Image 1 (cartoon, one colour):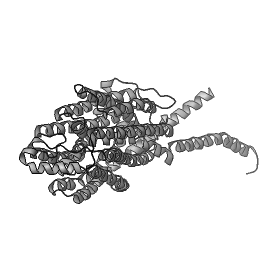
Image 2: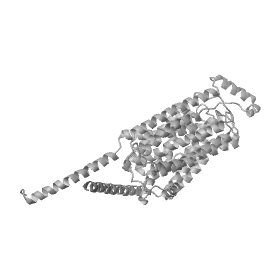
Image 3: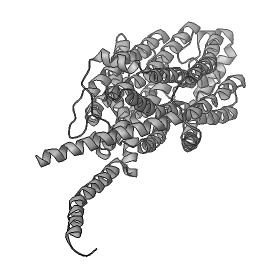
Image 4: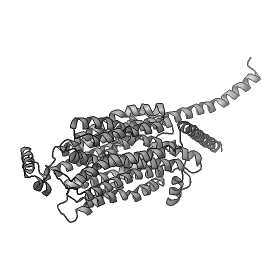
Length: 528
């Protein structure tokens, strides 16, 4: 067409439309870049999960045996500390989740300030848990107070960190990728926690003490035990106490460093989630969250499977040292389990993407059952125990970590069904964390109380037969029953892979519509 009126109109229209298209392309490109996470971002985010796993692993594997054999509390007192400390989370977890959900945005975000300010006091209280006070009468109060303080402060770290998944990107693919990084680092955290606590304490493991029953039953056996203990380097209980303090100091330093890396390397994206609805009351928020059917089913699954593995975790050290007789090797056995779990993470990530999350949880959790049976049926043999432990670690990785990957799907499903009620991510994650800690508290409290009834002898070279039977039940029969109950509930979990993909598309459409509305409002405001 020659230059004329028509071409001028076309040219003018093009000029008018060109800025709009350019702005749209720029906005779209900027949005994609903002949602995309770099490898560095994902690593820094994942590092933030290490403190919870390192301290949790150290407490889970060693606190019970520390209270019984080092602090020398009787099993009933130890059970009070373990259960009451976890029961305290019945108040702190939902409360912190509610407070976090009501927190205003700052220039650092909504979640990160909680993580930053809770860290210093958390590491101090953690260190004091592993210190034996120089008095006898107030020991129970000492451990109970600092255990509860640490649980509260760790909640102020872990609940915001768990909810941070929803704020690092609006893209589900990026969240899943960051979660995979997190799973790997968290399992590495369990290895670090087991290695630091186990190896340092293992080098200063005080010798066992023959009980009155041993002496009366067989004096010759007593002399053999005495000669065995005297042939080893002289290690007193004070050396063991010092070893626990050194390991807790190292873990405290790692805790601080991980918090700094997380704070400096991750940036919350305010527009990664839809705008919050009007604030609601504490109990109203709980009713809303707990009224979501898929979420209730998922936390019930997580409660039973967590309780099973917490029973195994909390009693396996005692089982290895007392029943199997590997008093000087149990820390290495625990380390083998954690190393095996770490190596299995890439496999489970592939399995999850290939066959779906629900199938992965089924296969991974059931894979541990044969080894739970084998470890109590085979006679005491160190090599076989190492082999069984390595194989069990593959299933432990899946059972502990895969359910966490399902939680963002439940949050997305809730937002799809309740589009006008948003900003409750912290509540979802706080109850999830609560049930993890509740399961740990129940398992440690019940198992320690069971050992008290069975007649457990602190630092005893031998234990009554009732103690051996009790430990076998706690590391095998009881966990298997709980796993089967949890997987039965999982059968009725309604979010399939197809529904998950559909929810993701619907949420993306909602976000795009809201973004378009905000853009139009901004343009109108500029025109006015």
